[in-house]
Image (cartoon, one colour):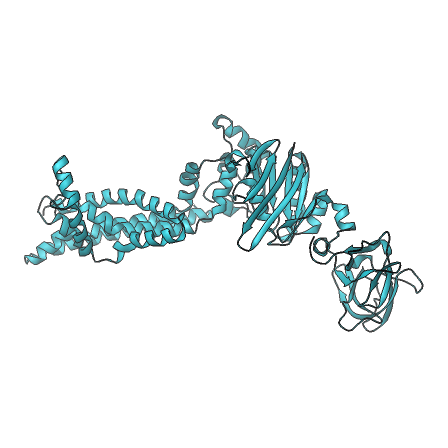
Amino acid sequence: MDWYPLFNSLRIAAISTVVIFFSGIAAAYYIAKLPRLAKGVLDVVMTLPLVLPPTVVGYLLLRLLGPNRPVGAFLLEQFGVKMVMTWWSAVFATVVVAFPLMYRTARGAFESFDETLADAARTLGRSNSWIFWRVRMPVCRQGILAGTVLAFARALGEYGATAMIAGYTPGRTATISTTVYQLWRTNNDALAFRWVLVNLAISTVVLLAVNLLERSQRQTKKGVV
Amino acid sequence: MALTVEIRKRLGSFSLEVSFRAEDGETLALLGASGCGKSVTLKCIAGILRPDEGRIELDGRVLYDSAARVDLPPQRRRVGYLFQQYALFPHMTVAQNIAAAVARKNRRAAVTAEKIRAFHLGGLENKRSSQLSGGQQQRVALARILASEPALLLLDEPFSALDSYLKYQLELELADTLAAFPGPSVWVSHDRGEVYRNCRRVCVVDQGRSEPVRTMDELFRSPGTESAARLSGCKNYVSARPGGAGVLVPDWGVELRCAGAVPPETDLIGIRAHYVRPAGAGEVNALPCLVERVIQDVFETVLLLRPEGAAPEAPVLRLAMEKAPLPPQAGSRLTVAIPPEDILLLRKGGR
């Protein structure tokens, strides 16, 4: 069994999770402060990938990054970088598709944050960046952690947009999900089933880890430790 | 050295217009019903909210001045703010909460240890706020505020989050803390007893407007307005107008003698329930009444009296007396006297 799809999937999911973690939190934090109209519009834009079929996302990405499209052609000519059909092309797909999960969960956590904590810190002389990293983030950690794990899980399982922008090249762009489809399509049922089991195992471990983390946090909060 | 505040701010249909001055070492009471703008005023002083216009000055430093376009951020105002729910950082321990307020790293451990000692928090250093009682939370919040070395203390309803049996001891502790604090303090409350015990001077805030600062005794002896009288705990009100040897009370069909001159704009009088007492006929301001109702309170007996000759819809007179073995019965007659010097001459509403 060639383990490349597992390695590739984990690599893509990990990179996109890092990107989504920071961009999702920044978007949640800054959009919450905007005036109502701008907030409403941006909120729709940020959440759209959650409800769009992944193939539509893939199509839009290809329109943007394809070698004959403005951005793709520019990057190809200026830097000789091809944006599609490489292993990291899939990162674009997974970032866009999984971003709303982080954005919405983080926003919910920020909205339930008690602003008097930030006010108190400010009257105590603490800078806004200290307040963000040392008060807001730790107090909202459960929501942020949940969003991160959901985004990671979604990125790991992304198929539609990934297949369109990165394709399926064994040993180069193959991920677990594209491999399962390819194996099933070529009647290699036994191997497809093995990859399904691998995927099930990873997802189970991830969700178990989240539950354990949440439980230990609840206990620390209660003081049982 | 003092705090001077003179601000205006509109919040939707509510408008705030507050001005007062608190001296060094003084605890000024900001007394008002809930929703009158007391908390908004404190937030403007701390820099959490921005007034529309005005000026705030602390120890000669301008914190806010709309004309000179000065608006210091909260971090640079040196204003200690005790929030109603104390606003302790829930993910930090007691020691971490206090240390978070010490700006200089090399002093952090020493100041934290000192405040833990001063506020009797030994043994609780590693507890989180959720593991503390309300009183302990308040001590941690005060320790944290003083660790930041503020030039001014703002207390927003400091006991609203506590059970009443805890309040007495904590109030003594807070009074000690305030007495040791060199700068001015502002104590926001709706509780007349709380501010009477702890403050010498008071600024009444009614529907966003502040009345002039006066001593606590002045507020209780001559509140001037109905809203100030209500805040000072007066329970009996009846319409009146200047006339005779004092005021005429058409609702009760009587004339009451007053001590001193009656201001011509007087249209209401207030009578404290504790100052009405049973009396013989012929005494000054004697008022024959019908006892409508007898209420047994914890430490006193309250009588609701209807003066003879009063109109049916006229307000009753509330009398509070020491518990007696044989209290007056409902339906019986009782003559009471209202001492002339205890009649509060008021204007209806505020201001």
